[in-house]
Picture (cartoon, rainbow, N blue to C red):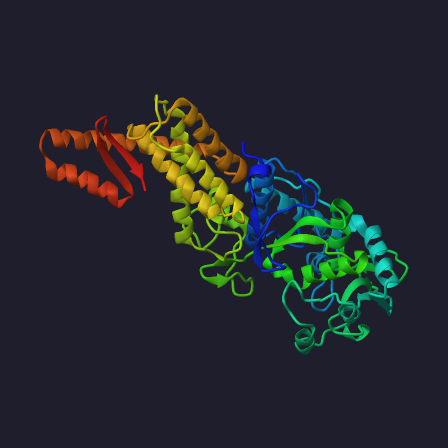
Length: 491
């Protein structure tokens, strides 16, 4: 196995808008924090894509031998809407359940869906409600340093004071405070603030608000942005390596995290900010209001009007990995069917690899192929390029099966181990027993057609022979005539 010492990773830092060499705070160790879900409803596919992107990063860093501490939080309080109403409290009223029943219900859904997609769990999964004390202590520190102020029982971060002291609010999203001020809408609760850009660290609870805790300022609840600063610093320190999330979190959530951390500790909290791009459906943004949306369970079960059949979770995972995590990915029936076809071709070849016998010499440079796979992952975790190299491996496996290529025993071992590392360990994919059973049936069916074609050729019935070949080719099944007989390949 290659190690981090002979793999130089470059990753795209959203803070500086460029690729940078990855140099962790502590050699051999990686601290990674990813903003988890607000558990007020079922997890959607866009969230799944984001968490899958960081699952790959987590898996690859561990594969290289880094000791990773991966922290992904659960937001179970404090995620404020535009009118500064808490999302979970609002949903509890709609569903006539206690807020913590809402939290439990949708946390279980979140874990179930990610398990179906074969995501590794984080090392620590802290909750906002489990860290109220830490959040209160951070607020005290910000008030003491005059970066926060109390107003009618609520506490707000003072963006102007932070900027006047050289804090540069907007540095991540590249927004200017003057532009933000000009575009601010009038919303409920704004009159408590000294400036519209100031954001809540603590909100005084209204009489009907169920989720509330005691604090030095009021009975209330924390603002959304504060929880991540409290939990990331508690488990990863005042400066850590990677902070990730969806592109939609860049502003205001991550921007506020930077301001809070720098206000408290007077240092950059994160070396590398990574953001996963959005998922669209049939070329349009997913939206409940327009009906252009689909849940993971609906895609898997087939209970939807967008896709012609149920999609296996491994095919969904493979589909996500065919696009770079920083690219917009469009979900459609045609794209998913193509992904399924490609995935079955890949798994069929990997299953066939077990039957390949070594030769005395090698006609293929395995070391160059392995290097190309690592190069793809070292270049900002480029999974689509890695997958293209895996399809090069499919061609090699089929050629080995036809005996058009050869690998020595040692090279075959290296090649097989590399396939295992990249397919199973890093990409987190799995062979599908049901799909392989279907492949066995397909294999037997095609062999019957090959026998019929061979019989036609012996009888010089070239018309029937060509028709069998051409009709299979139209379905993406290519027959190949060689010294050892006729074989086929699914394209």
